[in-house]
Every structure is written in structure tokens, then in C-alpha cells.
Image (cartoon, rainbow, N blue to C red):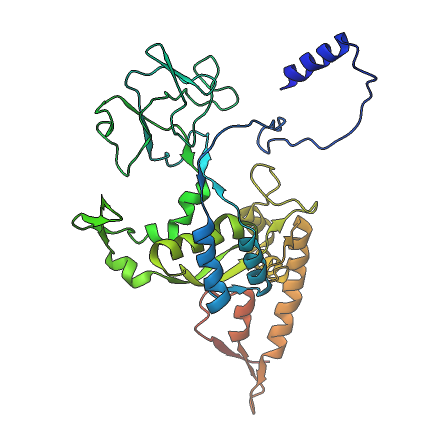
Amino acid sequence: MSRAREKVLEDLTAQGLVEKEEPYAHNVGVCYRCSHAVEPLISKQWFLKMETMRDLAMQAFEKRREPKFYPEHWGDIYYRWLSGLKDWCLSRQIIWGHRIPVWYCKKDTETRRHGDTEIKGQNFPASPRPASQSFGDGDMARGHGRPRVPASCCPAICSETTPERCPHCGGTDLEQDPDVLDTWFSSGLWPMSVFGWPGVKKEAERRRGGEAESYEATEDFNRFYPTTLMVTGYDITYLWVARMIMMGLYFTGRVPFERVYLHGLIRDDKGRKMSKTLGNVLDPQEIQNNLGTDALRYALLAGAQPGRDTFLTKDAFTGAKKKKKKKRLRILRQNLIPREPDGGFTIVFGAIFAIGTLKSPNVVWSMTTKR
């Protein structure tokens, strides 16, 4: 793209169409990993129609308030997001992930070029492939790093398992689509897949005019699905939580969890989300070694509010250590129980569990001392 801009400028200058040049500042999107500029590239991708799943989720929340969100205002935010939901682009041009379950017949084909396919000296229209890509010369698609996909006059083959031959022409030279599913599509199936969904295959039955496999749910699925509570950060409410809800309702008719608790994010002193990529994380083990476990716990708890971000610096843990010592002394003084007539006193340690000085919260320890 940068070379293309230079060529365009040269062409415009040669034609005398450039009036003036001046520098100006503007926003340029960059990759958060490598910091290179993100360039737009128009391409054809796989999309999932969301209308049916969206309506199921909206009805569940509108009529039954399922699931319940904590803090409650996130439920309204979730519902508004659903109401404006568009079709979902599923395909990704990366090297990891679940492959798109689509195959293409390579029998008597040439490589697709510029949207048309030349087969045996004749020009055929591009095959009905929703995710087809028009590639230029070379073994990899420019900007994508994905291999060329053969075009064929045979329709694309969608299958749960790798087909042995093309059902249209009988050819055995098949190639799977190089794209993979969006990570959040695979993750959306998590509440069901961990319990063995879709289950054990039963005898094939006729469904919707074709032959399809039916399944019997596993014992774990019947026992544990749906679960009771989902805890996660609010930043992936749309990416993950909403999609788990929609997929759960679509495939099982039930919301995958009764309640959703959304906590805030941990941010640094500049307001940036802590991440390994940015390198702005604080090592909890280092804090434990230098300031103690209680200081770590107290600082995290003191700054935690439902659905609100927590801003952490090393100073917060230093201050927490000082406050912890004062709080421990106050708790000890409040729990001194005088004993008569010997003048001794009993210290009850039960209240100290709140700041984590003892490991077992189910036992109250006491000891008797003399003045």
C-alpha cells in the first residue's frame, strides 16, 4: 500500500494535478503486536447469519431475564448490543484454529485468477464459494499469507468429516478451505463441549429431507448443563458471553448459565490494560516476597468494585502493607476479652481471618495469657 501511494502521487504529479503538499497529523491504525500500519484489504469471507440466534437471546432476556447480570446495568447494555447485531464474519486467515469444514474439488481445474476460472480452455464463472478469494500471481495471497485455493465448477462440499470423494463428479482430489474459524466462535461452544456435547452418536435419521446424525447427550451434560455462574471481565461480554448464550440457546434451547458476574479490568497508572504484550504487568510473586501476601490481598480487595476497573501501582501495595499493620492491631485490641479474677485476657483470632493471617476460615482459635 505504501508503494502504491507513492506511485499514485508520481502519476498525479506527472499530470500536473497536485496542487500542494503539506504534512498533517492523523490517526493511523497499527497492529498491537508489531506496531506496523494496518492496511485495508477487501476480500470475500465466510459469514454467519445471526438473526435467528439473536432473536432467541433477545427473547430469553426480554421475557425471562435470562441470564441475570451483575452489575445489573450490564443486562441492558447486553440487550442493546443484541438489538443492533449484524451478520458475523467467521473466517480468519491465520495458522491456528479450527479449519472451516468446507472442501473444494480440484478435478480438471486451474487456479482461480481475478474472479474467473479457466477450465480446459473454456471460461467458467467463479464457483459458488462464499469465502472465495481472488488471488494474483505467486504461491501466497498478498497480505494474507494463505495458499491459493483451486476453483472448480463443482459446488463446495460442507461436511463434519473429511470427504473421500466429490459427491458431484466423484473426484478424489479435494482440498480443504485454508481459513479457520474465529476464535470466539470456537470459544462460544465451550459451555457445551466441556461436557461432551454433542454427545454419543445414535442411528442416522432423516432430518430436513436429508440424512443427518443424531446424538444422545452425555451424563455430564445432563448433570452439569446449564451451569449456575459465569465470571469474566466486562471487555469480552460481546466477544464471548453473548455468543455462548446465543449458541447455547440455538443448540440446546437453554441459556448456558443462570448468572453472569462481570468484573473490572486491572490497569496501570496510565490507564492501560495490563497485558504481557505491553509489558506493564506486576508480578504477584515479587510483591509477595517483598511486601507479603496480606499486602497483595488487601490492595486488590480495597480497589475492587463490581464492574469497575482497578488501577494498580507498586505504591498501592506499599500503602496496603502499612494499613494492614494498623488494621491488625485494631482487630487485636477489639478482640481482647478480659478474664476475671486472675486479670488475664483471651485473644480471639476469628476476626483476623478477614485479612488472611490464618489459613482455615472455619476454625476460631483462642489463647489465654496473663497481663
